[in-house]
Length: 102
Image 1: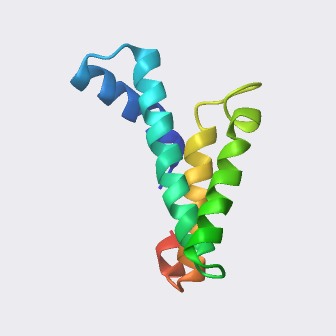
Image 2: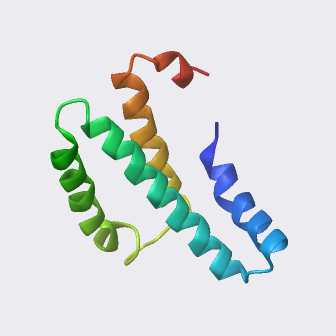
């Protein structure tokens, strides 16, 4: 799956369906992917830690979001890249790597 393709078309679909402005639809898409990435990261961290430490790990990762994705040199494909990267880690840990082959 080429997530870069979805980085531009999904916000456009959100814009046309919901009537939100283009910047608002990009924000909705970014926050939804950040939420999904947090869920994937929590599942990944549960491999080695209990739920409390996994939750703390997710919170720590969210602390760095303003420094990495939201401030300087933002690209529309940054947040999808993060979400797909963490999903790939989950699939590798759960021995479902066949989903990663193209």
